[in-house]
Structures are given as C-alpha cells and as structure tokens.
Image 1 (cartoon, rainbow, N blue to C red):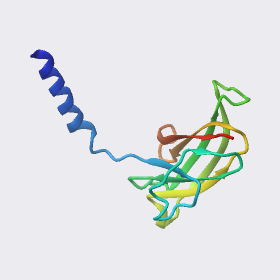
Image 2: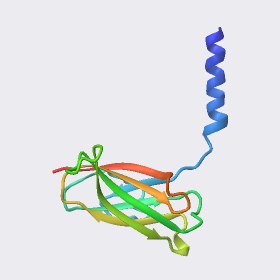
Image 3: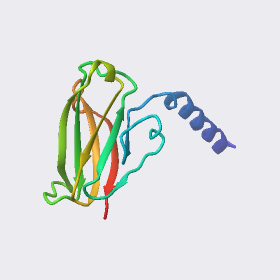
Image 4: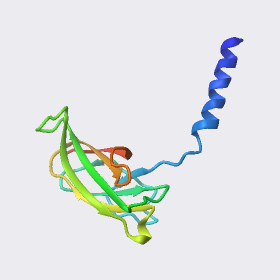
Length: 135
C-alpha cells in the first residue's frame, strides 16, 4: 500500500509541476513551411537537399537575436565526437518574434544536431533537434 501512495504522489507532482510549460521546438521539412506543410515533418534527407527548418519560440526573445549552430556527430575533426558544420547569427524581425524559418543544404551524409541559443542567455540552449542526411 505504501508503494501505491508513493506512486500517486509522484504522478501528482509531475502534473502540478511540469505539464504546463511551453517549450521552443524545431521542425524540419523538405518543403518550405506553409499552413499545408506544417503538419508534415521529416528528419531524414538526401545529400544536397534543402533542409527547411522552423524554430518556434513560446516567449519573445528580448534582444531579438538568436544563434543557431549545427553540429555533425562523429565529424572529421572529432572534437569530443562533434564537429561544427554550420552556424548563423539571426536577427528576428518584428513580425517574427515567435518563430524563425530558413533552410540549409548539406552534401555529406551523417547525423546532425541543431542547437538554438538566445543572445539574452547564450549559455543556455533554447531547443535542440536532430536530423539525418542519408543516401
């Protein structure tokens, strides 16, 4: 009976503390983001395909600046198993305070991780997501 009450307490704690927080997300697609393509997301691409990405922000960034970087897992440089493949500083427009969209192109196959940072707090990752480039 004691285990049952501990389980109930943990479940209640999870519902009270962590369920209503909104998070930033990254979506990937082979086509530009429109209302029709918003629901279809992919994370496996072919070499030299355009990889469209959409970064959603639940709260506006005060400085309106983001830093986006893409790391290749197991790259040639092998700096702790990661190699910096691409990076970009972004200034958000007034109509884009809750999202940013663009595309990248990679010719090398492998596993890539996209990380997004805010210039307000550059040591904390806003969101991260993974995609693959395969033949």
